[in-house]
Length: 587
Picture 1 (cartoon, helix red, strand yellow):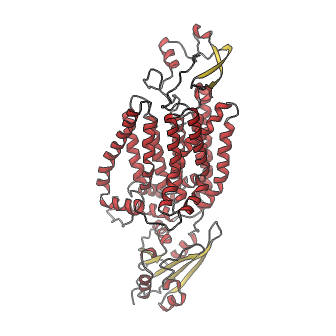
Picture 2 (picture 1 turned 45 degrees about the horizontal axis):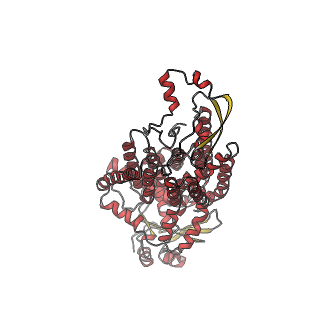
Picture 3 (picture 1 turned 120 degrees about the horizontal axis):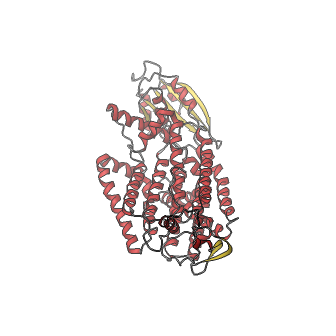
């Protein structure tokens, strides 16, 4: 399939150590001048391989028949593989290692089917709800970036969770072409590419059957469907993280090892820039460079050191040139020094359990299976991949917040799915004809759980369409507006599409007394509040804005009270107050 990295070569280098990834039989045919489909007289007497299993000492024991062999296969006993170097998990017994074009096509068709399923799960959500406040913020800021680049328009001060020059302009470009749906479809492309790269990475580390199962499990995870249509920086960051991981594994063999390591470091830095929190998984990517290397420990560790050096050499000047101290403040405020959210640590872990539980269990199973069968570096690899699943839940439990947890677990699930695919692919070795059913059952069960998760998480905010219509009826803008924090960003985005750039202040930035003073002195001509089930008290609800009699005494008139209901059954009200014409600023 286009865009999917080739994964035909075995995971360990050939015995001569040249690491070029070419099968010996291909070189043999090329050297002799014979066609690959014409057996030589010497090969006509070689019996065909009809079965194989991995022996207790790491050798491959082969069962044969008296039928004519494939001309390209050699009937030899494979040497035991080093216990410190990763190699194909399925061994040459599975169809993975046969090299036949038919099997390769079947894996590609399987991946295509998985991508189609992922698209279907995502597209059912695409038009299911209006713009979310995070989507609105980044798309709106992306349009502001374009205005700044093209016309010199001053940029507003916002502390974003990623570099404002990476995703926002790209998302805004898609938004300009096809609206919110276009920006969400861009995210779908990023996530489809991440799934394809997952297949490629797992196939290189283990086998194509492991890669296919890993991709299926990742797609079945509920938050993956959500991320596939979120018009935010997360899908782009996941894609870049996946690309960096694939490059890191690709560096394990070939003549351009140093180039692959450098590219992996550069893309890893770009992923961190797209979303600062992606840096939490940088150690996992670096570990892939080390643990996938077909060398001794000293040289493998040296690869990791060089990757870190390249990343620092790229990130330091880029941070200085593009953002300077402003980016450092953004990183601190939005990520590294983010304040406690007030959620109990156990509550955060309990919330994460159904989101990552299946992937984590299968990843831990991979650790056990690898330790029992091979040990060494491959077991460490599976352990690192399992740990990646826990990074987001553990960090958010540390800062005591569940905010964006359902998004952050997708990053770790991408790595965990690799180990899960390896664990389930072992069933194919035990029974090549029916073993695939185990992986299919695991992916199906994960999908049944994840289907409801995706619907619930994606639709938990109320539709803002009626609120936008009510605000537009009061146009033209007559001065500053005061709105609830989330509604402020939604209105900035929606009104921007209508060609209006109002000054909208968020109630989140003021104390209740400050809001009361602004209202009583007529500093704002419109006041909007959002109250309802599950919405905690904020500055607006504790000010005169929540008191209809006080608002009337201040000269405001209520022009809209809009009832909303979300998918979970929560209900509430959007309430809009405006000053009659001529009163704004009169107090």
